[in-house]
Amino acid sequence: MSLLHQIALTKITGVGPTVARHLLSEFGGAEGVFAAPRKALRAIPYVRESVADAIAAETPLAEAEAELEFVEKHGIRTLFFTEKNYPKRLRNCADAPMLLYYKGHADLDNTRVVSIVGTRNATAYGLAMCQELVKGLQPHSPLVVSGLARGIDSYAHRAALAHDIPTVGVLGHGLDRIYPAANRNMAARMVEQGGLLTEFPSGTIPERTNFPMRNRIIAGLADVTVVVEAAFKGGALITAEIANSYNRDVCAFPGNTQQEFSAGCNYLIKTHRAHLIQGVDDLAYLMDWTVDEAKSDVGKQLALPVSLDTDEKRVHDIVRQAGPIAIDELMIQLHWPQSKLAMTLLQLEIKGIVVALPGKVYKAV
Image (cartoon, one colour):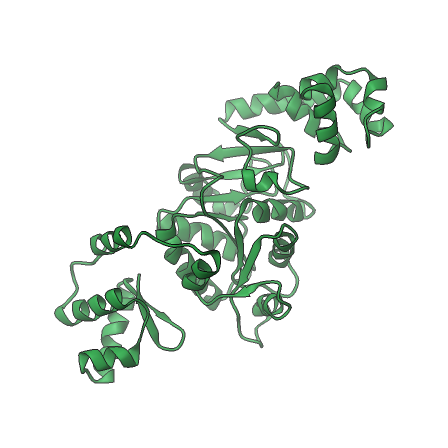
């Protein structure tokens, strides 16, 4: 199937996924659509006169030639919705884009795909929850998807890169630019350890109306969308609503009822639009994700710092073997005073091999 004609089809106002399916089915592919007589085009359901005129004109093909040159020059892959390389989860969405432009190496059909979204005005609480979530996802080998926006989106991408998790940013503009510009260096790393994906051709600027369209791709690519922190109105809640409309799972972290940027998450939970989660264990339980414990333990042992003293190693061994364990249970097993145990746990947290969960419960990383 001609890539030139596939791109040209996306240049025609009034040709969305539904009309395109009718056209492709009738004429055997994109090239056949542009070779079809105007009368035959008008006989197709939903094909307006203006659409038939546009197909018959030379403008879409001329614009497509310029885009094809850009794609080939910059090593960009195209994913057309009737072909095997199109993401299978997204293909099941009725409003999925006809054509995607992709620069990167990550498998968009990864066994587990998590979209992480949230406010651009992230608080320390939101950033901490995001960091802990992404770090905890590593043993599950997911693909992390977000929107490359400021705040939670960018933090999710950075955390994924830091923990060697493939991550894909879905853009609200063409691949000839990065927005916000502050993310250029991170985006370059993502191309090597994930990718950048958009439905918008080169030359498309990041207009406000593009971002709700981008959000449907974020939701459609994933098994589950996690809202880390969000105000009552904003893109994160739009993404959650879209994910719900696709019958995909949605999760949200609860927040302070007095905090503006927790209002959206609390609303999603209160109205049963999202599962309440407090960490990656809750997410894994809801999604029925398991980890090969043998491989997991090997990885943890290899990552163990050599600078642990005797007390730190003793506490870490108990926490690692017991799984999530309350501080009271640790005190019983160790016969230590609380002050000594609390100080040792703090040192282990600082070294990044133990994390504190709500209720004074600890688990090994």
